[in-house]
Image 1 (spheres, rainbow, N blue to C red):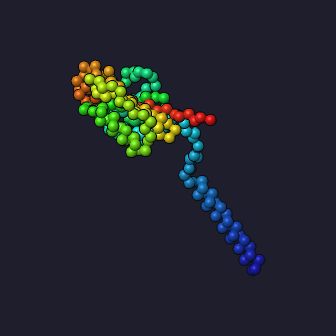
Image 2: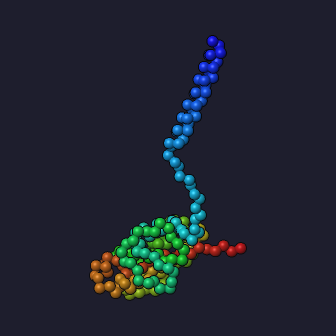
Length: 183
């Protein structure tokens, strides 16, 4: 009788271990698979700028490769890019009416409020059509930026009165460069 009860206990323990192992296997097998996380190297030429908030009341209309003159570009509002690249020109418009004298001071104030260092701010020329032409250079970490305004000849020469009434005739251009570290 003792021998049967020892064998019964061993069988019961073995059976219990088997049930436990099968349960663990079943649970693991039917759990949702967690995707593996890959480490992605960030392209150092891409910026997620805090200075973008400076343009909160502007309309983003597109971007072009860095050049002396702006090629024709969209006048319709575009969704903001998810990231900004260096050596591109990001073009913004403003609704009418716009006072460039006020805007020149306001943009500097907005940059300072974001703790962005202004390197140079210069109002160049007063034009009869659009007022002050300016540029503001700034630095934010390892990036240097420039904001400037230029007449948008598409708007200025447009026969579409609704376009001219809706938008001020200037492009506001943001350019970003990466500062190279010196050895």
